[in-house]
Amino acid sequence: MFSPLLLILALLLFIVNTLQQAFLSPLNKIPGPWYTKFTSLPLKWREFRAERTTHVHRLHLRYGPTVRIAPNEVAFTSMSAVKEIYCSGGSGYDKTEFYDMFKVYGRRTMFTTLNKDHHAKRKRILADRYANTNIVKRPSLDGISERAANFVQRCAESVNGSLDLYIYLHSYAFDCVTHHLFHPYGADSLRDIKDEEIMREVTFDDSLQNRLIGYYSPTLHKIFGKILYFFAKPRETPLADDFILGTSSKTDTAPFTLLDRLHEPVFELDELDIAAECLDHMAAGIDTTGDGLCFLMWELSQPSSANHQRRLREELLANPGASFDKLPFLDAVVMEGLRCFPPIPMSLPRYVPDGGRVIDGYSLPGGAIVSCQAYSVQRVDESVFPDPNTFKPDRWLDGMDDAERKRLFFAFSNGGRGCVGKHLALAEMKILLRAVYSKFNTVPDKTMTMTDMEMSDQLISSRPLGQRCLLSFIPINEGANSRSQQ
Ligand code: HEM
Image (cartoon, rainbow, N blue to C red; front, side, top):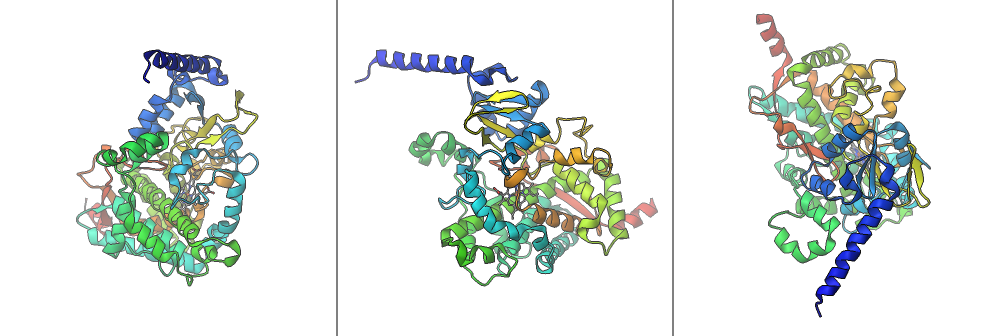
């Protein structure tokens, strides 16, 4: 029977418990806003509003490289913290249950394994397909070049108007990653509207709030799931599921593909394990490379970057036969793009191991959540990245302090759980930029606003708030003619 006395007792117990935790917590010595001693609600609120990254960054600017962001959670930006959290013992500390939100078909993939040993087992199977030696082989690289040519064709068709890069760069990334996963069964969304629909379904997913509610309050999610549907849509990707389930059962894909490797009988993976791993890599490869290129090309198209665009073009036109990875200014542009606009800018949460650890002089108990976020790691230390909010490719060409800069480059994370697709992503980015800027000048379309390109956090990656990025493409001969007429 309901008793007011019981309710009061429970409330008192809750208050005493919260105060005890707040005042006796070993995290109390860590700088941070006062309320982080008691509650994680302000952090969660920012997550729901897709603003976690900028919120945490503001806290770093105010409190320094180590900041408490919730009662049991601390964020760092130093090189030593990155090394300890993500690289100690090879692959750093274990992931938290945050990654449960990314389980596919109820299975854990390489990305969602929490424990180091499970992860190492899966990585041993997959890693060789993403090694640079595999990526730079002809059949793999030719596929990327073909897709870059398809993209350039889209640019050419848009001359005298504009092209929505947000759409077509996601298509490019989708076509490239599925080439690497499934050739000859990869998608062709730059030319085929049916495949474009699959890309749109994944790219325009708006399930952030719904998934966060499911994560933080599974009971609430269960009870109100149907009502919630009208306010916060769950993730639903039937077209992508059909594509993956249909394609991942094929056993005759090219030898360089991931699927070819996953089907090797020695690994004893069942059909659903294989499909889940493929869907995960497809999703990992679309938004990251697509949004990274989108923010970078937007930046290159600003009047303040006119000089960078000109120098990039000069390098490309002077070296038409050079390999995409032997062009220093192109490399500097890509590095600076990923520094200023890391596609995964937010915290990558990990548990402090049992027994506790000391990070940057602060003692942390086992079970505390620690993380670094690329957006801040690549900005906060101004002795390594002076004028951090300005896009300056030249900083990567200055031989001085190069090792320091590279050590603080965190866009692909670091250590054994860093991005396995890094070489593929870099090849896609460089090959596309070379194809485009050898032929075109780009400028923003007049209808675009800065708000359109503000960062909007999703669960693990960020995208432009307006979900559009219209640029005009001016063929370079035409640009030269109009300049000489001026
Ligand atoms: C510019 C593009 C990309 C960026 C910036 C990027 C960034 C990252 C980051 C930061 C992580 C670590 C995430 C974490 O610890 O929570 C990661 C992991 C991963 N990425 Fe990427 N990624 C990119 C492209 C790709 C591509 C093209 C693929 C594959 C086709 C890929 C596949 C993966 C996978 C499978 C993991 C999990 C690795 C593991 O747990 O061992 N990524 N990526």
